[in-house]
Length: 426
Image: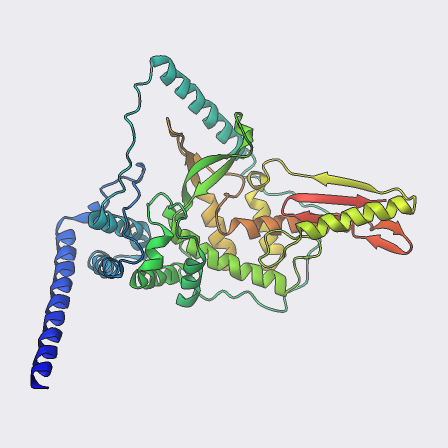
C-alpha cells in the first residue's frame, strides 16, 4: 500500500509539472506575440485571401484544449485594455493568426497552372469588367438618398401584445447557434470557421462578452459588413451572369450576432401574429408549406373545373428577389411592425456600410457597395425579406377578394413561399 501511495503521488506530481509546463509555454507565446508589436498580429492584409487552417481532427482533444487556452491568453494579452471598436476589428484576426501559427495552413497538391497567354489575360480583364458592370448595375441605387413615397393601402398592424426581447444575447443562445451551424461551413474574410468555436469553449466565452458589449453599445463592426462573394450556378452549363446565384461568405462572428437577432425577430413577429403563416410559408422555422400550397392550388383548380367556374391562377417569381429589396423598405417594415428603434439603428448601420467583391479562379473584382438588396447567406436577411414581402402581401390582400370555388367554398387570393407568389382569382 505504501508503494502504491508513493507511485500515485509521483504520477500526480508529474501531471502537475506537465500542466505547469504547458501553461508556461502558452503564456510565453502570448508574451512573444505582445512583444512583436502586433497590431501586426495580422500578417495577412484584409485584402488577401486567407488559407484554410490545417485543424486537427475532433478526436485530438488535447490539441484543441491547448489551442483554446492559447487563444484566450493571446486575446487577454493583446486586447485587455482595448476599446470595443478595436476588439471587434481585431479579435477574429488574432484568432486566425494564432491558429495559423499553431497548425499551419492546409497544403493542397495542385499542379502548376499553365502560363496564361496574353489573349487569355485580356479575356480575364474583359470578363472582370463585365462582372463589375453587372454588380454595379445590380447593387447601386440612384434613389438611395430619396425617401420612400407615401403609399396608400398599407396595412399598419396594431401595437404588439408581446414586446421584442432587446436584451443582449446570452451565452447559452450563442452556443446554441454555434452548435446548430455546420462545422464545414466556409469561413468569411477573416478565415475563422464555425469549427473553431465548436471546439474551443473558452474562446466562445470571450467572443460572447464582445458581442454583448456590441449589442449594449449599438456597435456594428465593419468586419461584419465585408463579404467575399462567390457565384453558384443555378443550372447545368450555366454561362451568362444571370444564370448564377450570388452567395456571400461573411465572418462567423457577425453571423452569430445577427442569428440571435433573427431568431428573436422571428419569434416576435409570429407570436404577435404579424406574419400570416397560412399565406407566407417561407423563412419561418418549423413552417413547411411548399407541398401544402401546391396541393391546395391543385384542389382549387379541380374544384373550379368540376363546378364549371372560372379560376385564374398566376404564378409570380421575382427576378433577383434578394437584390431588389430597398433598404428603406426594410426600415419601413421594421417601423410598421413596431420593432424597437435600437434594432432599426443596428440594421441601418449594417446595410449602409455593407460592401462585397466576387472572385473566380482567375480574377477578383473591385469592392462594390451594397446600396440596394440584402445579402444571400446573411443570417438576418431571410426574416427581413419575409417582413418586406409581408408588407406587400397584406396591402394586396386588402384589395383582392377570395377566389370562388363553388359549393360555398372559397380560397384566399394569395399564397407565398418567400418571393414565389401565387395569385388566385375568379
